[in-house]
Amino acid sequence: MPLRTMKSNTVLPDNFDWFAVEYRYRKQEIDMIAGVDEAGRGPLAGPVVAAAVVFGSGVRIEGINDSKKLAERRRIHLYEEILSTALDVGLGIVDNDEIDRINILQASILAMRKAVDGLSAIPDVILADGNSFRHDSIRFENIIGGDGKSFSIAAASIVAKVTRDRMMCEFHAKYPDYGFARHKGYGTPEHLAAIKQHGLCSIHRRSFRCGDTANYL
Image (cartoon, rainbow, N blue to C red; front, side, top):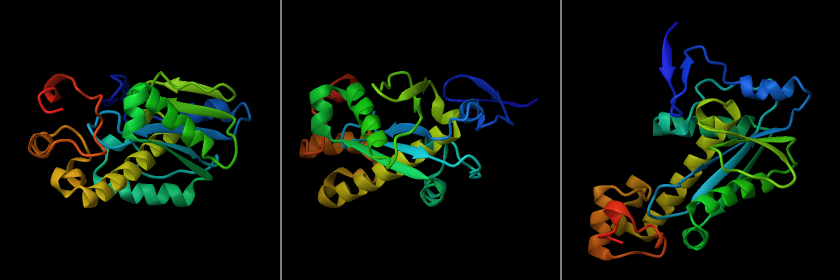
């Protein structure tokens, strides 16, 4: 049987069941399942954005996948379909100042918790991408590479990515010298050259002073 390798280095068959994780809970009569993921851990500028998405048990959307594996036009199409199909969607945003204050890992967890808090109803269980999410009062499961294994988490990754990209395009209008609409704050050569020429703007993460960025930040 043909195989494909997911981001988590787990080898899965082409007919991999995107709904298997959710089904484990649904067969226990647990229906309010929130998939949660974030976007924007790596950039030098801008916020980290998380989304929480809850679907009804019979929902299927063709083409759902880890947002990083999708072309921008396809992501946007799926984003609109997710918003029109999901039972509930919550967003969590943590800005660059808070990232600098508490570090990017804690900011990512905080954004995910805010996304869950933004849901109109408390979910029965949270499926979270990665291995760091925690919640004091709601059952949760961390899934490494979850955006490539769970329909709900993959949908959340798309909502988070499109939301953040649109925010960075808005920042581009305010700070046109940096090219945020093109690189979304990541450390591309264009972005690093702009920082070298113009210095930092108000949405840059001052704590990201490592590796190749040390000479610029």
